[in-house]
Every structure is written in structure tokens, then in C-alpha cells.
Image 1 (cartoon, rainbow, N blue to C red):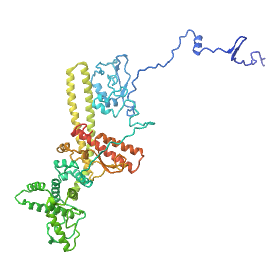
Image 2: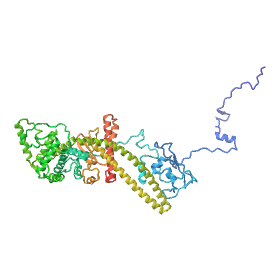
Image 3: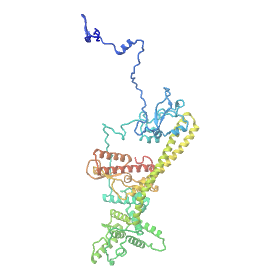
Image 4: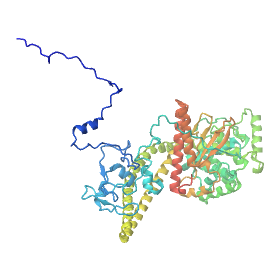
Length: 618
């Protein structure tokens, strides 16, 4: 049964909310409602007002979280600081990963646990710690030795072991680091280093002949066995080489090697020469190079009256060498050497020879014989050979040494032995790095201990720690010197393994870069002669042949010295390649050139450590 609707059930018309209040004397908007907080306060007058979270602006800087870099692994355990701030009496909340602490400060968890340390600040005040902390350790921030950029610590004030590590790890992110991407930032262009022009004292042809002789002697040092005194002269390409004495020394040395060797010559001259034209000891004899060299030595010694069988062979050779160095190479002796070179297949010789002539009839042979006899009677002062001609003969004679089978076998063995040396050096380098790391950790611990004992006034214990520290530094220095000497020996062996002289590379402006060898490289009895070299860039710098960086087209010779300039050149070449988006052969060539420049700077740094001292090649 349905219930009747009442007045409550009848829908009432919706009352519109008034926007204005209208009376006879007033027409205006309604007064605004009180804020929400005030209404709540009126509704609950006995409730205390709630505290509001307001942001308080402060100028005090807070040290960032240590180790926010990619090198830090989250899985590496961290060392928590147990120090208490002496001003606020609040415990320190910083923590560092063990890797960064060991790398930057030389402290490990084991070394911290092993000793009861007294930590002090830079002002000498002793640091207080929390009650029974898990690890009794004060972080670098509390000790004022933090090396991050926030603490604005200078690298020059740190121990050498810390300054080396700063280039690897930074405790604050830094967008200026080269190994980070810098989006939207323009890189500063790198200018090329300043090249110094080289004034050539000889013709370019003679300069190249001198360089080839020089590089051959460096690469085949064991074969040539040149005295350090002579090598010191060859170190400077443009100085007075004393060609008279130098040529006599090299010719005699080469003849001794050739006369006792087994040779496989390439294109030999098998021309039949009549025996009635004179000079039978060379013209009509064997074409085999060792036989000809032995015959030349025999004739030369007979002419000087040293063929007495009672004279020992070594004494005879030494006596004739002194005579030859004093008299020099006469025209007759040069003609004898020329006949041997012509028989070995060398052409374009500056001396007349039977085997290099085009005679075919008896009259032509007699005319050639007269020319040769007339040349052989010339004195050295009247010899038509210039210094370039004599150096060219020496160069051909040195190249003739490569026909020796034993020399070729020795070269192959040295190339194979280089890989074994590299493997041995790699293992020795790894062992050295591990031992050096342990010594540096111990050194930094002793440094910290010395500073702490000095702060608390324990002089006896401090002196003992300083003595132990001094002995450890000697061990570190000796180990470093031994390792650098091994590195240097391998660098020299690797350079000598490259048997051909070739340019280091070419850039897009047409400059060719040459890195010539250091003839006075260790052993140490040679190095002392380096200090008198007036043009050290031939051995320790970069020689550039081309227009340079002036924007011209004229080819000239330039030089570049110093490690810093070489590093700048390396960066400049890399920038030019990246800017032009070069690919293919040019990119490979520039990459090889930068590697060679890097190897040259590494060689110079090693030479500084082993021989000359730090900063010598700056």
C-alpha cells in the first residue's frame, strides 16, 4: 500500500547562491570567506596550530656525496667516517668507497684496522670519534685533506703519489673533463705549435744521404759496432762529420765483415774482362764479394809493408786501421771499393770501373784501363770525389752488408725475439705495478703517521717512522729506475726492429713528419756525448718538411722540440682530422702519426728519468 507523499518528499526548488547582497542602502559583492586555516581554528579552538614546513634559505655549503663518478662501483664496500665535529658536536655522515680511499689516500681497510691511529686536522687538533664505532677512521673531509673540487685543494700541495692519481678519479662530477660529453658547448680550438725553420748547411741530397747512413748505423748497431766517439759526431746531421776519417773507418770495418761472410748477392756483374789490361787482382778475379774484399785487404796491407807473417793478424789490422784513418781513402782505394760494388750490382758509381763500363772491343778496354789508371794515380787533394760522392760510396757499402746470410738470419731472430721481450716486459710491468702500489700504500700510511706523531709531540717514534719512510722512498725510487731502464731497452729494440727509414706521416697541408733515431741511446757509455750536441732535434725532436703552418706553398725544413710542443701537435692533428670528418686512409695515417708522436714523448720521458733528469726535454 502506497504511502502518501508528504511535504518533505516534494522536491523543493533549487535556491541559487547569491553573488551580491542587496539592501536599500548597500549593493556590493559578498564578503570573502575566512581562509581555511582560520576556519579550522574557529571550529577547533582548543587544538594547537600545526607547524608548517617552510624552506629556510641558507648560505652554508654542504659537502657533496663523495664518489659520484662512473668509476665507483656500487658493489664496492664503503668506509664510514666515525669522527665527531668539534664545533657542532655532531657525528660525520660521509662515507667513501674503499677503491677511492686506497687510490687517492693510500689507505685500506686492513691498514686502518691494523693500527690504532690518531687522526688530526690540518691545524694539528686531534679528532674525536664516536663511542665504539665499527671502524675507527676519520674521513679526508674531517682531516682537511680531501682533494675534491668542493674542498678546493690544490694538487701541488699533495704528495706525489696523490697528485698522480687525481687525473684518474675525481670526487665531484666535472663536465669539463675530456672523457665526458659536453653537449651544447663549443670546444676551444687548438692552435698548431710554432715550428722553427731549419737552415740547411748542405744540399738536400747530401742531408738525405747523411740521414740514411745515420739510420742504418742505428738499426744495425750490432753489425756496425761503431765507437761512441764517432756516433757522437753522427748525432748532429749537419756538423763536420770529418768525412776523411769517417769514410776510412767505415770502409775498413765493412771490408773486414764482408771478407769473412757468406753472401747471396742479387744482380751481379758477370761481364768478362780481359786479363791483359792490368789490375788483375780485381778486374779478372772472382766476382764473389767476400773474395774481392779479402783480396783488397791483402793488397792494401802489402802496400804498407805490414804483410810480415810474424805479425799477429789482430795487431796487423789495428795498425793498418790507424794508418788508414790518418791517410784517408785515396783515389786508388776508392777505385778498388768501386770495383767490388760494381761486381755486387751497384750502379751509378762516382768512380770509373771495368764492370760498369760499356766497352766491348780490345781498344775500348784499353781506353777504359787508361782512364782507371789515371784516376788511381790522383792524390786525395786532387781526387774528383766530393764529400757527397764519398758518403754515397759508404752508403752503398753499408747496404752491401745486408747480403750476408748470417746478418739476415740475425735480423729474423731479432724480430721474433721482440715478441718474447714484449711478453716478458708485460709480466714484469704487472709485477712492478703491484709492488709499487703496496709500497705507496705503506708510504702514505707512514706520512700520515709522521704527521700525527708530530702533532702529539712523540719525537722518538716520529724519528723512527721518518727513517723507515726514507728507506721506503729509496726502495720505490730504485724499483722505478730499474723498471724505466727495462722500458727504455724495449723501446730501443722496437725502434731498431723497423729496418727501413720512412716518414712518420703526412697531414692535409702537405707536411711530412720525420722522427729520426737517437744514436747515443743507452748503453750509458754513449749517453755522455749527447750534452755537446748543438742540434738535438735530429735525435730528440720532430723534423717537418713542407710548407709548415704558415699557409704558404714553399717547401722548407722545420723543427719542433720539447714534449709539450709534441703533445700540442698531436692534439692539433687529431682536431684537424675530427673537424674535417676524415675517414679511410687519411684517418689511418693521422692515427699512426699521433701514435708515433706519443711513442717519441714516452721515449723522452723515460730518458729524463734514466739519464737527463726531470724537465730536460720540456
